[in-house]
Length: 63
Image 1: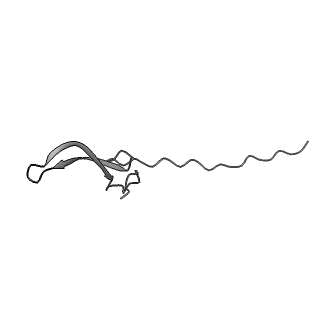
Image 2 (image 1 turned 30 degrees about the vertical axis):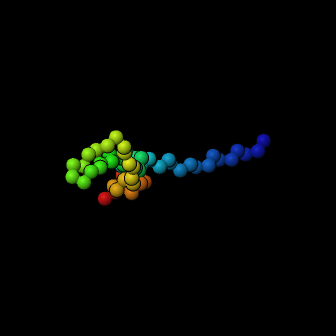
């Protein structure tokens, strides 16, 4: 019989980064479209944009 090889050591799994509190980890924020120069009426349409807190990564910013 041949000698057994030792099992390779595995690195521990990295913890998952925390989600951004503003966009819930999506990386985008949604806002209603407002029209009109004086009253700024809100329409049913929406637009998405890059989350300014996490810059679209979805991870919580570190201080």
